[in-house]
Image 1 (spheres, rainbow, N blue to C red):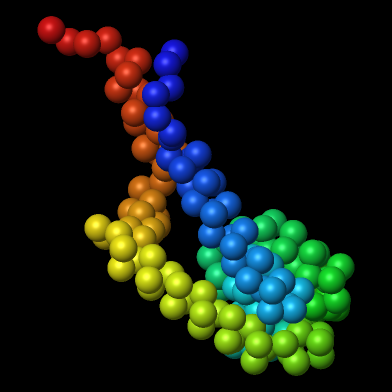
Image 2 (image 1 turned 135 degrees about the vertical axis):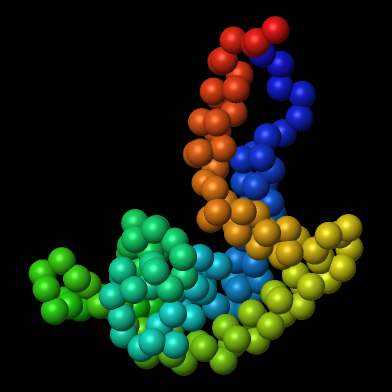
Length: 161
């Protein structure tokens, strides 16, 4: 087997590394103890107030497990707190006062990040945000797993002549 060019997964991981690392460095330079993966959780909490892990996962469109891992990191850093919900399995996430005080600085940093993203989009033949949005929509219509399974069937079926 010969691999001549990077695969989709490798390209996506490389892109995330290039983007998230620089965004995180910008937060650090601004004196903010923040990671890019915290921002969707913050947005959900500022819109909804204290809410469950499950509700955050649904709102931001990621798995419950991913939200749980992110919130655990945020708890360790004193950015959010967890309290019991209405049943034993539910946990409610709430912002800590330190995080609430950081919101104006985080909003300024987000505005700078959005401006940098718009500049990047302007340098591309098709804006990255547009391509990513289209890819996500297409994958909601037909998952990548189904696409892989279909491609595998085609490759293993005997050719008809």
